[in-house]
Image (cartoon, rainbow, N blue to C red; front, side, top):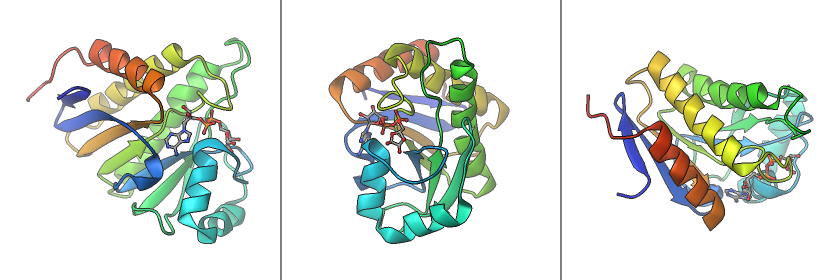
Length: 185
Ligand code: AR6
């Protein structure tokens, strides 16, 4: 299958489409520090998920760049939502790469802590936050690999849900580079 790898007993795969209709345990949102909702994935998640998600975000109030917080999933086809705050691209010299790695690791850590075994993630920071796509895809997939090296056999599936063809193709290249072949251990 195109866009699928097995690594340390976890499937890592790619899907092109709208994350709000993707059935999973943990759905990741690309949020902002104020958790106030916005455009892109965030707008779609709040629109489809209904007002209980905004109420839960309001109660939490804030999430630092590079980390993620959990809320209920409202009407979305997931058990929980992780509101993940990626970095705004400011030229690359302001810790953007470290923050992007950290936000992916935070989401996966929350998944393990809450026994959410199928995680769906968007391409964090590559929309309104303007992170260059190729570099972001490489960090996304290498963070997943790093996480699976440290936590083998816990998560069942990690799916990147990419909205458009250029994102899908760029993530596919990164997937094949970072996971050169399926490991059937
Ligand atoms: N499903 C999957 N991917 C999507 C969807 C969707 N429904 N909609 C957009 N994308 P962005 P960021 C893609 O801007 O860069 C918000 O206003 C989109 O094409 O959603 O992290 C927040 O409130 C792009 O590839 O997130 C923050 O203020 C990717 O998702 C800010 O934007 C990320 O684009 C966060 O910016």
